[in-house]
Length: 288
Image: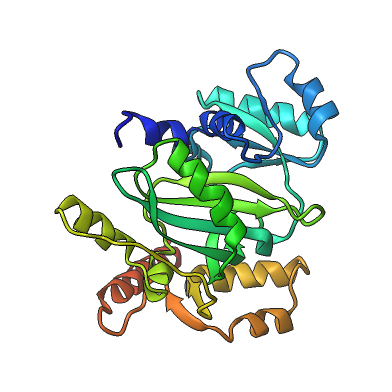
């Protein structure tokens, strides 16, 4: 990054919201809890349900093991904000963009040292864990040109460099895409992106060592889906339990070629290590 602290600024939800507004990119309506009348504004401008989310996600996750707090009334909002502030964590209140988990999309891109998008593709999430507001456990590569049309100019305008992943949500009522957050790191979808034809970590290495990285875009549907099997099984149980998905819908989604999160036939060590971790947890519960 040429601009020192840009990644930190982007990770801060308030700063990202300001950047998006400045560059005419849609973001969910957001209210800062530092304002004296924030509860009244939430009642009038956002409504319920809504979410209270952190400006610093890693610190919030470390403390509460959750990405945000769901709020159904003004008392929930007040309690959530107070709970966060008690731990010294800043939070914001945000409107929930209507739409099921399959309305979540990603724009994955690499920008060279001139801050120009050289490689990119888009994906559509199917399932998350925790369900509704969690990390991807089943995501399919799907070409959506509009995500490039929104994401590429924005990332170039803010001087971004290297790999970045914008998460969008499509409003089920209007069809508009809203920027939710930007992951300023390689994500768990890396195995999917690689199988679809773009090795993003290798691009960074090649550029840093003076290589010619060229350009590439995946502008067709490859029929490949990322799956984090362990958490997807847990998520499926919750989706069925809450009647958000049927068994038929889940089985239908499994027809795609898989890009496993951990397992690889030519490099099985990570999978064996993961199984070892699970066995230790099981043993600890049984002994305890």
